[in-house]
Length: 397
Image (cartoon, rainbow, N blue to C red; front, side):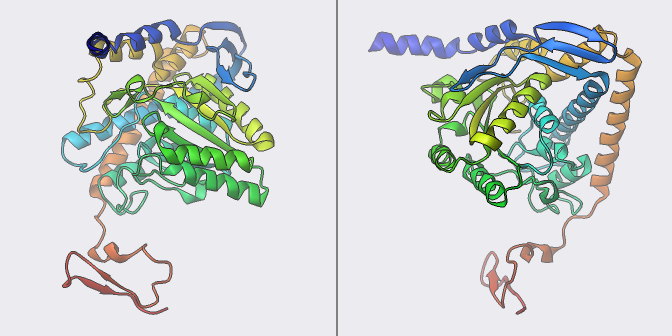
């Protein structure tokens, strides 16, 4: 027993090495197959599957598509880095969970799906809002608690929302969005609109009981639902293997098919989501595991370096960074000159800077906003504030 505990202890100290080694083995897309005019064809890293055949690993993209991916990836990265600086300057307070490193997941998802498809995710949702057509200003202003924010300054980091693009927000409760995502899939099925619901959660939430309840209901009713585990390998500060007896999250659906994808490669992600949507619409739910990585800590209170080494983070950046992957495809294969890339970066930096200045200048919500957006029809109800002296009486409709 003592020997086993000793082994576990040593494994805990050296638990970071296997991830770094795996990252070096994976690397960027394994091989450029051909470049014909403005179109490049590559072999992405193989998909691992459960109860389903994998999609083709041969993926093509045009120069314009790659430039669009680069633009979107870089915008999300710059936005999150700016949020980090604003938080440290105490212009953003409270909870704040950054997405830098994981951008290829949401950009690849949007490249494969439509805005008529539904998306719901966890509290790490800034990038999802922008990818669903929201603006950087809406995110930054929401983080600052301003009226021009995505949720009028009343939701904060964890509660972005864009109903017009079928983005049903981030959820502050770990795993709570998963059964809601199954409900969105039921709505698509009921309406017969041909859409799918994407319900996203992390490896830390993957052990929640409600996840398996949602799996079961979705499978019984053949709901068009894509369950997406964004496996960034750490649930807060706990490595996946410490919290999950089986960290092969794509197999967790058991009776549902599943697939593991290189979540740092936007081309591999796009291919996976296109394949998953086609399956879900015709055959029912499927589980996707996105093998990804977050560069920041779990939240702003987590330095992100006490449970993993700086060498591990550096290795991922060098070997698998989603932005550098697309940059490399564009430049190394002669699709664009470096000046084009620099121009995009300059344009986006200005966009982010302008959004920050507008967010700073925006007003905070008026005190009366505390009582709004609670009831659709309050029918003369009263709400109590901090104590009995703080009462608000709603007018009868």
